[in-house]
Amino acid sequence: MKVVQLHGYIPLRIHCGQFWTWDKERILRGAPAGTPDWACLKSPSFFLEAKRPGGKLSEVQSRRIDELKACGYEVVVIDDPMELAQWLERRERSP
Image (cartoon, one colour):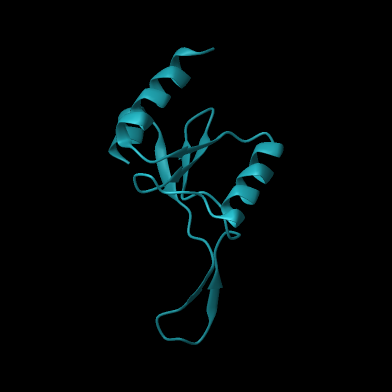
């Protein structure tokens, strides 16, 4: 996330699924399954799905990303920090 921060974005981790509280008395619900890992905030913002090198999207991730794009959100899937840095540089140069 250092690369994102160096470009002036605020990375916000998005937790998906269901989680038990520490005392196991209730369940917390996160974002819908397949939601990208990070929202990178700066106008205009984007969602970032970070994969390990060579990692692939699951079917539910692909569907959720398609839904977000259909709503007009920009979503990028990256598996390499250098690729992210290059993508951010191209994005920031375009009007």
